[in-house]
Amino acid sequence: MSSELIIQYILSGVTSGSVYAIVAIGFNIIYNTTGIINFAQGEFVMLGGMIAISLVPFMPLPMAVALAVVITAAVGALAQIAFIRWLKRPHVLQLIIITIGLSILLREAALHIWDEKVRSLPYFTGTVVTSVRIFGAYVSPQVFWVLGVCGAAVVLLSLFFGRTLIGQAMRACSADPLAATLCGINQKNMVTLSFVISAALGALAGCVVSPITQTHYECGTPLAIKGFTVAIVGGLGNSTGAVAAGLLLGIIEAFSISIMPMAYKDIIAISILLAVLSYRPTGLFVRREVGALKEF
Image (cartoon, rainbow, N blue to C red; front, side, top):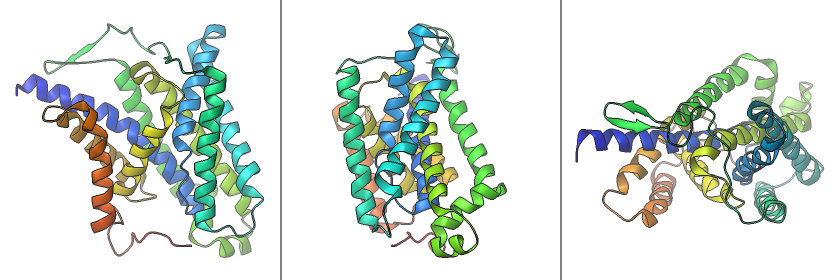
């Protein structure tokens, strides 16, 4: 295998791994506030891309992306208010089933609104034939947008959860809801805010990857599976670990096509997920003594 081909595989893996990482960060945002996994996160990614594609003919691309993020964030808030906020002392299994049902509902709604056609946003920079040469390999300029969004998300969310009162209040709601309530924190508002931020981040991810991967109503489910795998491997709630795990999974998948048919690529993510859940359920990037999974 030539050095140019190796670099091409690495760049391809970094691109797809960054997408997985962004989806995993969306999982972590809600987990850090509620302690549950939102299996509708992939549909937020799909909605962001689809809404932006529908708006592009009527406004400039940046405005369409911004409005798509706002609309998807509103959908996330409405979904939480309609299906979760009114519940009293819900069990974790009940919440997981609700998010799975929400995922199905959003996917079917997208099918009726946009049908089965595959669509995509225009490239943010350059065109489909534009490429940048890096050490003999070629990469689309859109890849840098994906990497930039991923890096910015990690930095901003780390600052938000670690340095702001609202971010710390959201984490307190996950650690001890009763104590957070006694301290004057409105737990329900914090949970709604987590869905808003998670949906907005997912929508932004859906927009930046749409020119590369294209968008259709079913694209959210595979991304949710990969994002969940990355979130588990990186350690639930650990956004930095999610990035490392996402890049690792993306690069492994990229090199796998050189030794097995592409149809088997998705098996890798499931195999890694099962292995991590069996032998290190706290994740590869979290210490065992501090990384135990939260139980309800």
